[in-house]
Image (cartoon, rainbow, N blue to C red; front, side, top):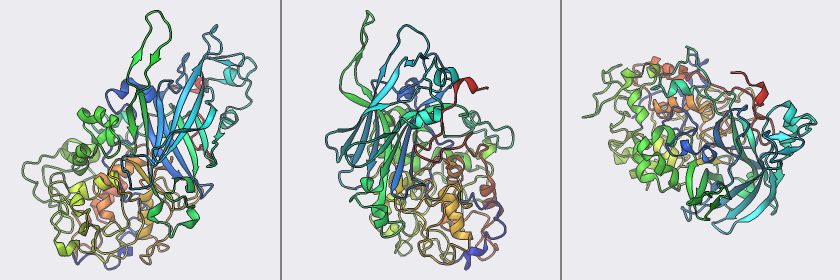
Length: 597
């Protein structure tokens, strides 16, 4: 292990100047798209309860506030009348926060939303007419702390009417609103109870973007051949919260009180769910529908894509009903040997690849769109990270000394035959600590098991799928020339290649340290990041380079294989519209009369 570069800053300075914003991220998983639209058989039949995406990020306008967003009801046609999508009445929508390791199965904070729909004018088939709405939607927001009783913090929240068209929204025969965006902003509520949460519930542009058609056609990405955003000009329904850091921090402290920008006491885990009554009775005579008051969870989401592209179809419905932590026995194996890894390795050796693990079959040759993404088989001449291989599990006690592998988490991270237990599994189930080896290659002088440049700490050792965010990390201004939708990946590149950040191994505020997977911003381009990570870019970030780099022989780890990973594109790399510059940040929904397909 005593080889590699003595001056890590040299290797990407020239060759990767153009592609530097696409190198790796230290927290990834194995998906092909990062949204939960119709991800399991049963929830595909229940769109009102389908949680499509979860976002958690530092408010770029206020360092003392965090924004949490949970989106529901996928694939809404803006012109989809006469009964337009809205939140369901018999559903409990919840956003869950964990900020302590005690009582791992109990939420530290829960926000619950229940909705009521009122038909104001049963004499018309129009959704809006003469200042009245069919199915006008209002809500109650309740809050529970430490698993205690729920207290109402918004008693009469209003969901803005659907953005049907100018006659329905702007004219005197409709709602007579001068501007839909201003009308929508006017529904933001301030919670009671002293914490000062801001709350928005309503329709929005779907902020996720991906070439859905190509991806689910057996990974036939068409990056240079007509890629199409399969979610363009669709709406979703958003629940958005703006919450003071001190409300979410484990001891009630402000962001300004953090010891440094990677203070582990500021890590939170966030996930969202939807629950329905276990029994519903329909009246044969057209009377009222009745529900019992026992609810069961039918949808959940934390880290994007886990249930969509990691869990096999036979496990998806059961996973949707489980709480974080309860799924580990099933999901750990899928994270440690992700299915996508099978399509990023070849049966026929390339670049002098190591021999396959006994009995293992790969399918990389059958997926041409992923040809540039090939997992390390002999990194540093020794380490194979393909499915079923040894990974780092063979490290000696001396090599593990001084690393996170030496302690109690060593057996969890180093598992023979499950190589991605060292990177992808902890990203999903514990977060990533600021500890060796999970630091950038800067300063390691060729030894990936040496101390390097810190750039992440979202470690919350409560095993389970949650979107983890370190609230001490400053927001990168969206107007900064360094802002990148490559999230933490871009921070990694800057931390290794940019003279502003690679001169030492001290903690610095590197732009985009606040990006996915340290939380998730609306802008973050998770598809490209995740695919690169599955192909081994996370490992390359800490100095476990690709097969065509030979220590002491190859001049630089910026080899053709690494460049291929860096230049990879999934085809659709930005949303079809902008994001708002203030809360709730999700964009105004598409108007039904302005959509052309």
